[in-house]
Image (cartoon, rainbow, N blue to C red):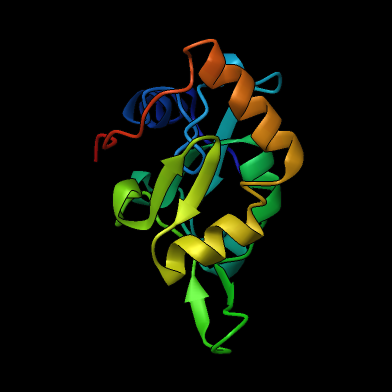
Length: 142
């Protein structure tokens, strides 16, 4: 496990408005909260620099693991995951009802590998939207 200082953790969380930078769930609306994700894992040469850290819910972070991308099922091309430090959420995804729909290949690979639309996450998102606590996407602080 990599040590990340309390100050760095706070900066990452504040920058993300305390929401998962991948699925947009707020940390207070998920039982397990959120944690620090290495966008490029240490295993692949990633650092603890703020530019390589994202705020992620447990489910997004566990599905992502140490991966940096995946093979596109149609083209066979290696496609990187959505990178919250380089990409705008709105360019790669849109929220339609309770579904996070991909708009690009990067969005498609991220939605598929992070299981953003599995049944449990759709039910959770539906309940949060009904309660008025699932936010509409807005740009994160860079």
